[in-house]
Image (tube, rainbow over all chains, first blue to last red; front, side):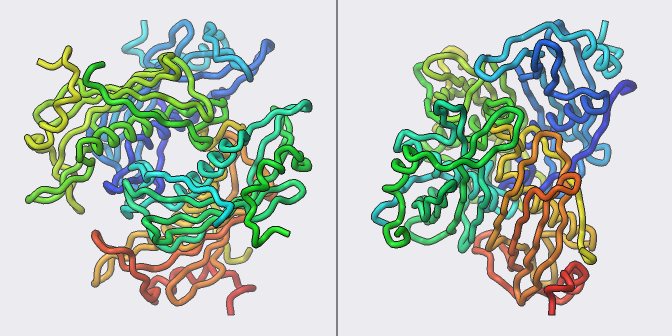
Amino acid sequence: MANGFRTQRRIEFADTDAAGIAHFSSFFRLMEAAEHELLRSVGLSVFLRDDEGAISFPRVRAACDFRAALRFEDVADIDVRIERIGRTSVTYRFAFSRDGEPIATGEIVAVCCRVGQDAPPRAIELPKWIADKLRPFVDAATSE
Amino acid sequence: MANGFRTQRRIEFADTDAAGIAHFSSFFRLMEAAEHELLRSVGLSVFLRDDEGAISFPRVRAACDFRAALRFEDVADIDVRIERIGRTSVTYRFAFSRDGEPIATGEIVAVCCRVGQDAPPRAIELPKWIADKLRPFVDAATSE
Amino acid sequence: MANGFRTQRRIEFADTDAAGIAHFSSFFRLMEAAEHELLRSVGLSVFLRDDEGAISFPRVRAACDFRAALRFEDVADIDVRIERIGRTSVTYRFAFSRDGEPIATGEIVAVCCRVGQDAPPRAIELPKWIADKLRPFVDAATSE
Amino acid sequence: MANGFRTQRRIEFADTDAAGIAHFSSFFRLMEAAEHELLRSVGLSVFLRDDEGAISFPRVRAACDFRAALRFEDVADIDVRIERIGRTSVTYRFAFSRDGEPIATGEIVAVCCRVGQDAPPRAIELPKWIADKLRPFVDAATSE
């Protein structure tokens, strides 16, 4: 994954469930945390401001396929790459592993939105200055 | 508990941890949910508006003492009473039980605050119309 | 949805995030809670025992598509149906709505597993007595 | 805090609530994560095994006093010290700060218990080999 971004997260006790493993919903929190860390690494955030107001990135899709379990105190490697930068959206792909063993793969599609206090989010074209910062993470094989 | 308010919550799988019981942090979520249900029962909410703007109730204290555990699918009775209505704060007391067996007792102290987008919450005197709606839940023995 | 199962959940304050809406990971907790309520309605649970030991249903897939947001104290209707009962797995489909407005649709694929303390879950054929109880929820249009 | 243990945690988006700040229940998850990190630093865990079986540390008390709020992406310093090692229990004290500004203080009392699959936890005397590893974190001023 030439253009990838890798981070790590330890499974906390509160992430586990009575089956003794990380609850499946925890993977979605971890994917989002990894996405935000990628954004921070290039000076971006999920809350941005430009001249016209606030911009945020609500999700229109989140999915995860599980192959193996994570347990309390396991340290997961999380690889993040951007599969696609669309006109208004960014598609992230995630791969969880532990010591090289594949654990899960996931996807989040976030849409660039103008957000305000009292109105629902409204999709806008992804500003060029944001897209330019994300492009290095786009997987070469899948981008045109 | 003559002036009390009782509600119930079922322990969901996501509330449990690898010890097979409801994670201790879940009790705080359940206490808050019970508090909000009490507020709804008299037409209040933790987010209110008056002529001057938005009012909310950040917590300055939360505590819980645990005597026994709750497990997945257990149904907990949660008794709520108001121990004290102060000038700016409301002190709630919670008792968790299961089929009459005491499980845990807790406390939340919430402070009435003027809240806005870009400034920290600022404590204000509890409006009389709010205090009047809460007074029926004050435990007779402890109020003067 | 002739064979469907419907339940309701209120968005609690702890489910919300700084964007003022229910955090996307909350939808996965709510889907699971709805699945478990369906199981309870026919006398099943995600933790079962038969003569050979414990049976549980780890997830191999979870996905959600979001069309609109839920906010604090919103009451969501959650429709659940079973799309497919496989040899070892059950595929659930979920539809979230609020006052008839579509909010989100989701999917969980759970695999019937023999589970123990010290070994990873091992997929087993779905016992007939469990499959028989689930069959009424299978969507007629999609079952063969 | 001569004998203290300090760690850091970043507030993730899923930790926040619709008031725009870290939800108060998140502080309890963060306290526990800091406690476990302290235990790991001396080769301990909240799940231990000795010749007689499994040992764990259920909580009998958890409390937090809040002075200020944490927001998304804030990095909190968490100072942990052990206030008291009792016959069966360990009392932890936590102090949250951000760039030196006090945010919150908390307490967790954990009880050393023999734990098993099908019985409630049973308090046992804290084994000497565990107590010896924890003693360096006991605050000199408060220990006798």
